[in-house]
Length: 426
Image (cartoon, rainbow, N blue to C red; front, side, top):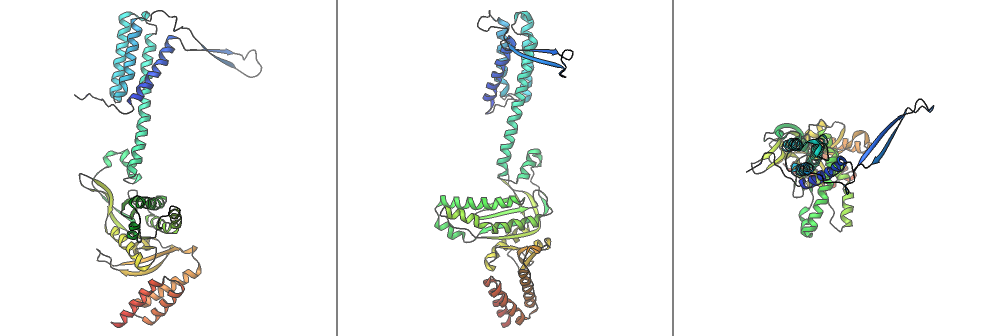
């Protein structure tokens, strides 16, 4: 049989012990073992210092516990009721504890009426006050425990879903649903270059340590720019901006995170070298566009994630970093969202699983922070790309060759030159 409001927890014993301790102090106070005396004295008429009154507080004892006569049946029955209240109340929820407190009040009143108030060492009014104090302590302890539990659950839940979503679920459990919403988001894919070779040279425990350091490093920068870690997939990290919290700067934040991951990777590699572990190189792809955001899965397991074309594009752009030998590649929609940034156009390709072509760009930095030489090379690169699209092969070859020697990466410009050579043969 299930008792209503009965909910024993791991803190029940601790709460009971605290309540019994408080009851002990209250009983000793009611008996007169502990007592404070307060005295006020007005001094305004006899003192020119401006002091109006003095407060005198002194302790005393009006009852000797060891020389007292028998306490009587009423005292012991009241004490038993109060002890039972302290022991049983933490085993129940708030409503059950309130009912128990009212029952204790009724039992104390009945006990005093049966024997007369003069038969008890402690006045009935003080015993009723003790019930109120004990119940108030229980409410306070329960609140503190609930706050700590919520914080612990939030920390645990935040490891599986974005922190904003965890807070929303705690505020409103009804917010947990299987329906998704469409959002404009930016997605970042970060993947280790040459992970297979790294995994082959490390034993499983060292590989786990290596991956944990890598995931922690990437995740810290993602969170720095208010992103959410969507999932870890083998050696890949998928991060999202614009979900679950809306953002008007999702493209900017995603790009800043991607560039910082590459700019600060040497700090991670230094830690790897200290532990005699292989260093890491990463490729990053960033895409912006609409996606469905929300829980996805089955009745056995749900996962809060994003699905859509922008996710697929970001993953395919990351794979292109190996071909073009650049650390970060963004899609055309991301570049359009960031007019203050300078990009180097790489190519226009049709990625796997998508019919519409995507123009890929390498981010170089904010325009007003770049050197004039870099801006001049970007202009030459744009002229070379325009000449190539127009079929002006001689101009394109001359510019690409110049950029290969002065800028690089050489392997990327070799791709362009071989493409022009093949086009000339057609």
